[in-house]
Image 1 (cartoon, rainbow, N blue to C red):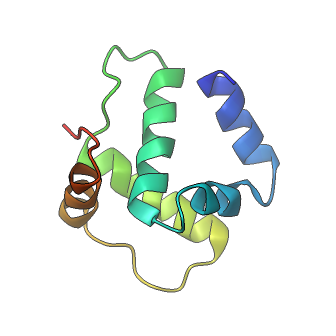
Image 2 (cartoon, rainbow, N blue to C red):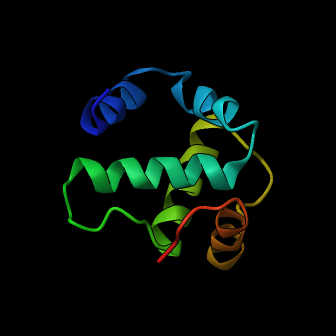
Length: 90
């Protein structure tokens, strides 16, 4: 599925954000990384690697959409968790 189609499906399905978290074993940092990456790929920015701010914004979006009550970690923490999992963060 193309990134723009993925994002459209995410917006249209009320359970898509929860499924995104499930796909990453409830790891908010990795789910947010995927969402941030998809956003960059969809807009063809020429920069396919998300930064900490983009990952944090995606994490906020996922948390809001799924009703998570625990606070979203800081940009620095999310970026570190993504790097520890082998993801590249700018």
